[in-house]
Image (tube, one colour):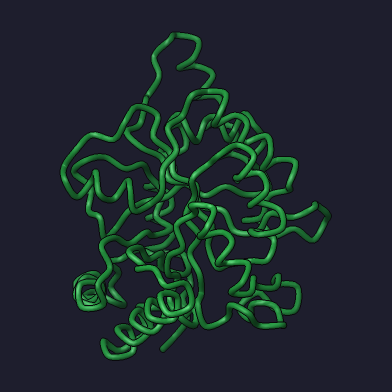
Length: 284
């Protein structure tokens, strides 16, 4: 991670020096926890202070924020997104998305999309996949307040499973149950899904998953799907395999800037190689 950071920042500084920006079409950021700080922070968490700085940077630099659904509609139509388009997303539905991130989003008038692991919302215990220190979820009243403020509420499946291991029936049930639960609780349609965990849609262990996923998405009424695959988004991309750029605890403002400028996307092939040959995945 240190080498990725140093190379990305160096690339950003170099392009700035020669006045030759990469200017990606659109960038979708993915956040998980927004914390007060401390030694126990997970790699995909950021501090509240860092998040405030990042939202201020997006605003001050004239980026064009939108929701996942809005960007997906442009991609689906084959239209070029506005210059410096950006989407801020949050996975899982942590309580600190409401207590920490929401006030900053509201202050900066920042659109966002929150993906909920719907079966865990309202639980009094932390999300189970991260252990006892994994962070507690929001309740439905808090989710409703986010929605009323204009934040898109979307699906992160129902129970947060490793979806390539599911049968087609189980996959459809996860997607349908999450969408139905959110729609019943909030009274508004759900259009977008984000897959839990970081993995390629095509892999020798699950060669047909991408096709099965598209079938389940269509059957459940989703119009777009986000992944954890790194990269930016253009008008010719697949709305059912939208790429995102992760934001984590090592992201100072220089690296954050580099990510928005497209100077972190070079790590996508490295991610693909790691996922293909080195990463371990849950067994069915």
